[in-house]
Amino acid sequence: MGHHRSVARASLLVPLVFLLALPGFAADLPEAAVPERTARRLRVRPGDVLEVAADPAMRRAQRVRVAVVWNPAEHPADVARQELRLVLRLPFLEALTGRPDTVDRVVVRLRQGAQAQRVREDLEAWAVGFDAYTAEELAAHTSRAFVVVSRFHRAIALVTLLAGGIFLVAVTGLRTSEMRREIGALRLVGIGRGTIALAVVGIATGVALLGTLLGLGIGAVLVAAINAYYQPLFQTSLVFAVLEPRTVAAAAAFSVLLGIFSGVAVAARLLRQPPLEQVSR
Picture 1 (cartoon, rainbow, N blue to C red):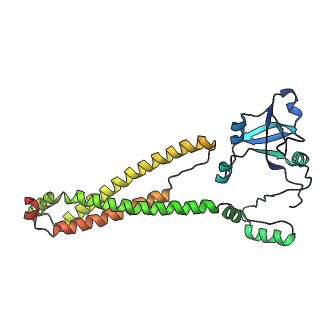
Picture 2 (picture 1 turned 90 degrees about the vertical axis):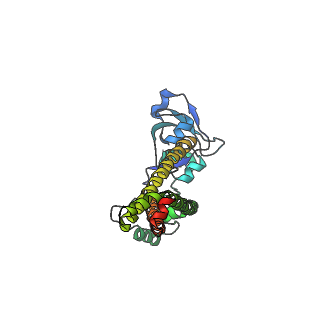
Picture 3 (picture 1 turned 30 degrees about the vertical axis):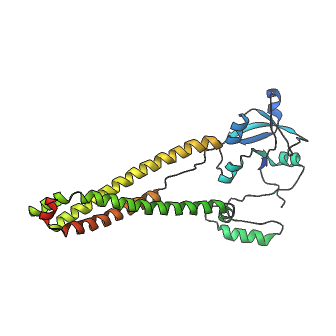
């Protein structure tokens, strides 16, 4: 807890909100800003009048006018809780809650080039009675569960890549092994072993890249489907699934390496066989 009078606005979690049809008195009422998700749930828009209180029993309820509806950046934890939120001016919020000259949280925005860690240390040395955190520390503290989920997703992705890689090697190996007659004929007409090996590796790599493009297309469709389902469900613009460029690059590089590896292995096996034996099969 700390004392601060220069804060222009503060947030309030509203236990119960009633929509009032009092347009004639709305101009003289205190103003409130409403996040878009809360506005959709309450079906309000700028100019509407709400009755708000700091307790579920609606004791000392007061009326406010919706001044603006905006779409703030949301945290995944806030979306999961499905809370109603209002942003009120600090003097009105103090009167509503009965807690004058008291704030729970103060956000300080630093100028470009300022050292957040040094500012935090100066604030902690300047006074007692509050805790100071940098944005990075606060994000790390509040996002531990999401870090665990992210690591779990990475483990799933690694297992998927390994399983897909084994399948890819098998497919490319079978596809190039079916070319043994063509390879035998090329060797009989005098085509060099190096040229044939390079062609086999190129075909295997092309098959691997084609499989990668197909997988990326399926992934893009799944990402779009997940966002299309969960965004309306939670009434938020938060993105639940995304196809990251580094993931695409890693998958493409992995498939190219596997294609080259399988092509070299198949070419080495086929070129060890006599060309007449390959043609006769």
